[in-house]
Image 1 (cartoon, helix red, strand yellow):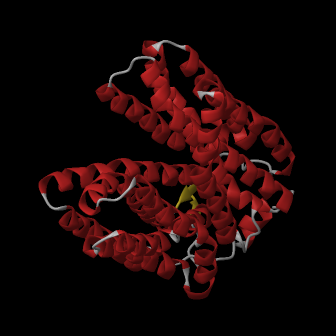
Image 2: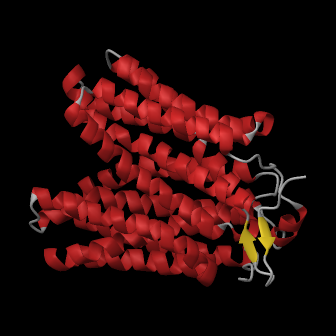
Image 3: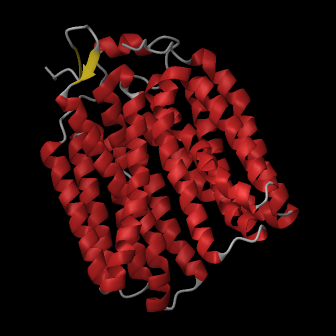
Amino acid sequence: MTTPSLAPDSTGRQHATPKANRVLWLSCTAHALHDGYTDLIYVLLPVWQTEFSLTYGALAMLRAVYGGTMACLQLSAGRLSQRIGRRTVLALGTLLAALGYAAASLSGGLLGLCVALAVAGCGSSTQHPLASSAVSHAYGPRARGPLGIYNFAGDLGKAALPAALSFLVAGMPWRHALWVVTALGVLVAASIALFLPSLPHDTPKVQRQKREVPDASSRGFQLLLAIGVLDTAVRMGMLTFLPFLLQAKGISPPMLGTALAMVFIGGAAGKFVCGWLGERLGVTGTVLVTEGGTAACIVAVLLCPLGPALVLLPLLGLMLNGTSSVLYGTVPDLARPDGIERAFAVFYTGTIASGALSPIVYGFWGDYMGIQTATVTTALTALAIVPLALALHPRLAPATPRG
């Protein structure tokens, strides 16, 4: 019999057990590492261009190999975990991602880098569906807040690992720096294998009863997935145009980097805050606030002079990223109790694919209509999410009362 992940105290309130907390922090560590691994490529692309005389098309291919492999294998990772266990697959995937970067350090050209990044992407495909579902199983109907923390950890990894690699590359050959990155991945993989609690794939009976209110209908999940895909498209489209909008307002190149950092800091805060906000306003209320706020911030940044636009950037980042936490936290509510891993895998596959394709679509639209019109289109896309959120509302189970 498994240890309950939530236990009542003397007042009857539910508190997370040490087992649940251990699941959360190890899942956060895995998320930070794998998201950091994903963004390490941006630091390495200029290095590889100089080292191997690669064209921009070849560099784009390297990024696509990693992202495409990671997106396509998430469903397979979920199925494999059903056979050999979530902890085993997550630990092996983390080890494989680390070994992929070790292989990249030994490569001598484009083909070797493609193979190495395919291996790393294959390993990273395990993290999102398995770690998310682990947190969901550990906290049951109160998983929305912990899932917000989990998503916030990914943004910390995106900020910390590329910065650390930049520092290492400045002081040692890039191949040696990748061995340091590999060692970190091996350490995290070992920690997962040794310390991640074993959790059942099916949902305990008490949790099933709380989730099977208008049931996880396929229509409800489809609406949630559509919201996630469009929300990702808005975020990636706006981030594609933002540097050029700020340049048109006269920002200096050094200040541009600071401005983008302000957006990313706001985005990290948004994932953390909106996970908890979802518990208070509900899914629909939070989505309406964040998507309406996103559209308003986009238009304001587009119309304001440089100074006010810079002040708005952290709020823009919070709105752009905030929706994702509440969406991820809703996936278990719309999944069958025995299909949470698959639901997370499908959801992450859709959002990752949207993140890869939407900048291309918006880019061509910007070429055709101009950057300002294309930016307004991203705001309109955010507003298009509002009716989808309203349609989703009747399909959601009533929020669990706060203790």
